[in-house]
Image 1 (tube, rainbow, N blue to C red):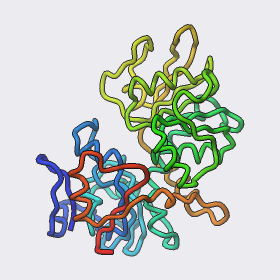
Image 2 (cartoon, one colour; image 1 turned 60 degrees about the vertical axis):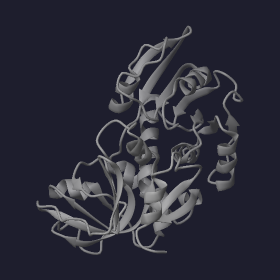
Image 3 (cartoon, rainbow, N blue to C red; image 1 turned 135 degrees about the vertical axis):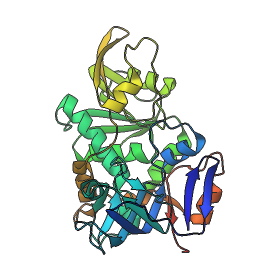
Length: 333
């Protein structure tokens, strides 16, 4: 069984996934998947760039023509490595392409940790990539004042990793209900505030981790960043996005990981972007999830669990993803 995204919208199939015509190829038995907000953007037609539908998953290789990915290898998916693959919202997923690309797309993980934790490897790798972009611009994070705008999964992971790196972190959100849910998850112990409650010009770094870099959110980021500070764009942008009075192409900056020096109301600041991941990000993410002393308890963000028919029904609702993460069981549970 699998849920695919087609021209007419999501579709539930009861047939097995077709094997790709090309070799090398790998078949993965999916243990667990997770619904990402970018999946919902794809369903709504508001996400730009190549499809990554059904990309947060953990599974075990059950058939392979790639020596480095032997049968029995447990893997997670890096969707930014372009291979021919099926949806991860399935009991099985085929992936095909050059052996070196398949090896990078399917990152090996240990067999011991629970799937409920490892299914978060990809979003944590994205958060790691974001903080690597910050470090390139400001040096180390230790002691830096970091404000993260957005208390969704991405924002909380970015805040947790920044806190682990020794930054002085605050999380800000527009919704009090979302902040209350974030506190209940107990993933990290940092100030959680509503927009407007943190003093202006009080952050060396502001990470915009909301679903979209909306004008009101960017205004809050620009209010918070100190002179000479950094605004890091992590949330979604569209081609040609600009902000009145801020002389940079927001989408280009985010997608290319570039940095633009700007002036905002007489203050000099930098705007940079974060997009995608690399193998080092996945290695760091897996290390944080499997640390024997202080593992990142990502599973605390699981808010609901569904099977594949349940996911199909969920994708037809206007706001399928509330606070927390929805995990998807490919088989009855």
